[in-house]
Amino acid sequence: MESLLALLPATVIAAVFLFILKELFEGARRYRGEQRKKQALRTLLARECELNNWTIKCIRSIVETIRDESEDGAQFEFIFPKSGKVLFRVKHSDSDYKSGSNLAETHREVMDKNLLEVATLDKSLYAALQPAYDAVAELEHVRQSLIYYVAPEDDQDKIHLGGFTHYALSELEDVSKKLACLYKECTGKDLEKHRLR
Image (cartoon, rainbow, N blue to C red; front, side, top):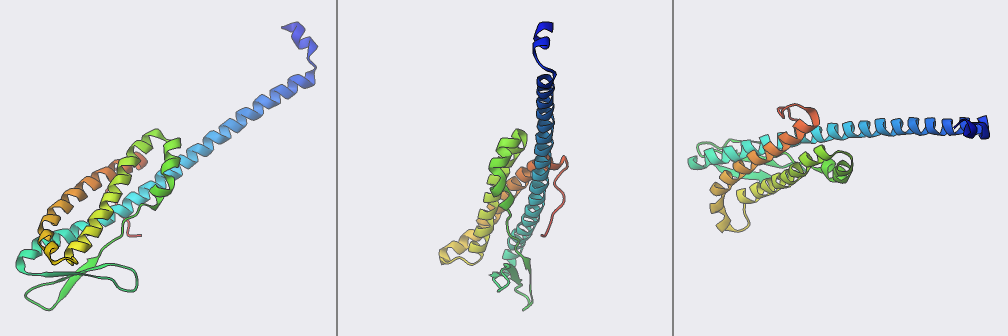
């Protein structure tokens, strides 16, 4: 070993040492960058869970209103104003007064854009994201079906509104559980918060 060191000039030894040092620093920098990226993805996905949690609450409220008010002869409708929102209205049988609320949209843009990135960066986060991604697709289906069954194009489909309410409430519970699992993976907390925007 001593003879090998004697053969190599000090500049070569210094160059090898600097190269190794540079690679160690570069590896540490990449590791910290990946950790920041993972944390940013978790924050964005948690936010999307909170947005969809609001959507679940809105849809559940509307479906429960339809279930509870149908027997009293209430009439239901959706209004589509120029603002792009979807408004739910109930006209009670004993008055001309209408009550209602907004029908919130589903949110899956962050999931769409980052599904592959999460799959390559974080195995445990991907395991929670995949079912949540499918659940949000189901949430969108429930939302679209709700709009349809309140005012179906085919009059025969009006009889399915009662059955749809039971189906929707069951699906909303399943969607909520899957989003809660993703939120727990992202934040370590239970999904109790919601966001309107």
